[in-house]
Structures are given as structure tokens and as C-alpha cells.
Image (tube, rainbow, N blue to C red):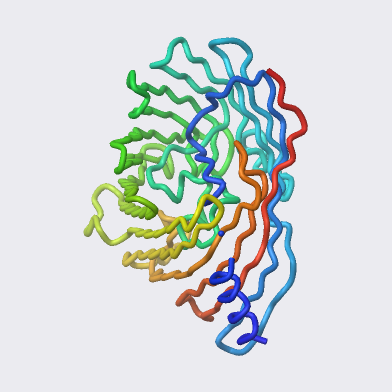
Length: 344
């Protein structure tokens, strides 16, 4: 069965897919007064472990209700709820609500965003909508990317560069109103063939006790090839070695045509800090001390219908990692969008 599944995905790759590519931190710039839609992703997954155990089945990976639009020429809004995520006692709105914000744009150069929004951390993997991430490592899989806060954004006249300053509730807050915050400065750069998403971040673990991020996202376009290279370093003030805790991501894509894209991707997460005796003192909950994790994979995407929003996508990929127990994943699925209302 294992050999059959691997041969199946290889045959799909070579006989048959450009991603939805819906950046999370690019705030609403459309003209619709109300645009309501549902995004759904269904995966057929099989896991093969070194101890010969197998797990297989179908899963509704994402089912997301979206509504966004313009109130007038200066005000716009966005709301998204993931219906496959259980709602729990909320720290802010609910953990299954990703976006619930109002945006004020006094002119083409300035935006102010109020409400629940993306935490502004650099990197192209972090910037993608969750249904567009197929292969990922510890950092992406264990992070909480949406928080309440305020963002101010400056856009250059040619709209190629943006600088964002953000204050949010700390991603590490354990309860509401505990006076811990996160501070971020992020730069989107567009130099035609070279794009950047760089950030510096300071998040409070407790009042006055910060973890710092330096996140550098780079994207290079050359003809039909695209390379995304992300690096993130995480550290505390007074840490012995400021480069003990970091993550690397490399993704290479080749567009066979407007409909077909093949890609390969690798994530590497490492934290060489010692595990504290008191586990409540762990400062990095995404990549905990002692982790040395590599994830590798290859895949393909296919859009059978080309339109403005690319409403139907098929995907297939194979991925493996070095975590104990080691496993391989074979995944074949589809993502589709249903537009309920699109009114100008």
C-alpha cells in the first residue's frame, strides 16, 4: 500500500498543479461593498510511520466563512471565522475567529487597522492563508497568528513598499487583560524580481519580560521560477547565545503553465537552549528547547478554471520529517471557494 500511494502521487505529479496565494497581512483593497464567500479544503491523507503503523482517511481541513468590503471610500472591514476550529472561552473574540477588524484609509498612503488581525511577523510562509500552506515545520504548526490590536501602515506612492507598526495583545497571553503586549515593525518591499517581508518583534511573556524575533522573508522571481527563503531568529535579552533558537524555510516553485505549478519545500527548526527544570519557564512554545526538526516535501497544484479568484484548486504532495517516530505523509485534496454575495 505504501509503494502504491507513493507511486500514485508521483504519477499525479508527472501527468498533471500556482497557489491560491492570498496574503494575510495585505488588507482589503477591493471595491465591493460586501463580498461574502466560503473557502473549503478537503484532504485525503495517509501517514506511514517507521514502526510500520499507518493512518489514512479524509479530513475537512479548513472550512472558513469570510466577509469583507468597503463601507465608503475611507472605511473597510474584514471578518473570517474558521468553522472547523472549536470555540473555547475567549481571550479575545474567540479562537476560531481569525479576522474581525475595521480599516480606516484617509488616503492612499495611510491605513489604520483596529481589531483582531494577523500578528505582523516577517516571512512568506507566515504571510500565506492557512489553506495555502501544505508542508510546514514546528514554528508554523505551533504558533498563534491572530490577535486583537492596532496597526498603522504607510504605503509609498507607487504602492510597492509598505511599513507597518503594530501593537497587539501578546501571543503568549494566558488570560485576558493581563497587561502583556506585542510590538512589531514590518516592511513589505517590492523590487520587481525581489520581494521582502522583514520584521522585528518584541512579545511580552510576562510583564516586562520579552522574547524578541528577527524575521527575514525573501522572494525571488525569475521567469517561471520562484524561490522563497525565510529566516527567523528568536532570543531573550541576556541570553548566552543569541543564535540558539531559529527557523529556516526554503520553497522552490516552477510554473509549468497558468494552471500547473510544481514545488518543493523544506523547513528546519532548531532550539539549542537547555530545557528548564520548571517547564513553565519555557520561553519559546513553538520551537521548544531541544528541538532539531527537519521537514521536506514535494508537491503539485492544479487550477482547472482560471478566473479572478481561482475558485477551484487540486493539490497533491508527499512530505517527511525526522521527528521520532519518523513519518511520511501522502496528501491529495482540493480547495474550493463558493461566493455567496459580491455586491458593489
